[in-house]
Every structure is written in structure tokens, then in C-alpha cells.
Length: 62
Image (cartoon, rainbow, N blue to C red):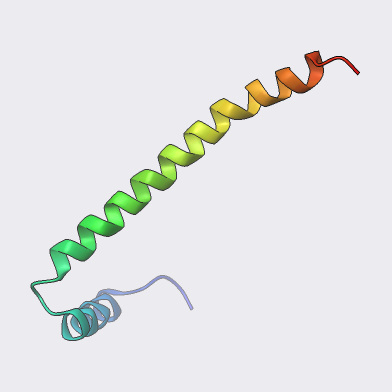
């Protein structure tokens, strides 16, 4: 089973339109985009915080 073809994507889009309605699709897309952006920001802030945490662990007296 390879990647989705055009016909499969059209069927999925049709099902989504039937379930949520055409008026809700922009809201769903906006919410999904914001969620992805927040996830990426969280990953970046986690990467920046990790070296600081490692420095504080290595410089703390035992």
C-alpha cells in the first residue's frame, strides 16, 4: 500500500465535508494550523531549555 492517490484524497475530503459541513472547514484548518505551530514552538523551546538544564546539572555542587 503506497501513498494516497487523487481518488482516495477526494473521497476523504468528501467524507470530511459531510461530517463537519463546509462552513466548519476553515475553522478546522485554522485550529489544526495553530496546533501544529504551537507544537513546533514547544519543540524549539524544549531544545533551547535542554542545554541550559544540562549546564545547571553539571555546575551544581555535589
